[in-house]
Amino acid sequence: MELTKDTMIGELLQEDYGCAAVLMGAGMHCVGCPASQMETIEEACMVHGMDTDQMVAVLKEYFEAKKEEQDA
Image 1 (cartoon, helix red, strand yellow):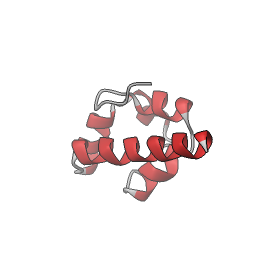
Image 2 (image 1 turned 90 degrees about the vertical axis):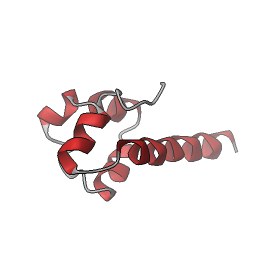
Image 3 (image 1 turned 60 degrees about the vertical axis):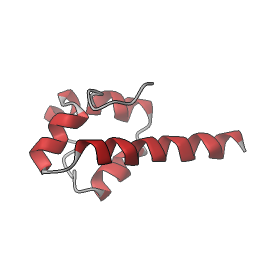
Image 4 (image 1 turned 180 degrees about the horizontal axis):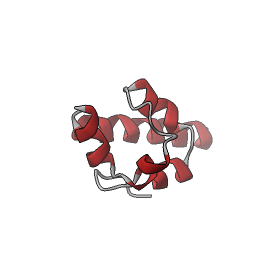
């Protein structure tokens, strides 16, 4: 999956539900809300007053670390 600011929260959670902890840790406690499933990362960041690029970078770090762990 290519992770961008236009990635839907629902897609992200389907790819790996573990990233919910990353989102919640950043203050997005509504990841379980049905409406959030149809929001992009950018839209969710705007609602929560967060920097989209920073959130995408944090999520990419999470997925990269997980991949490295699986490859080890």
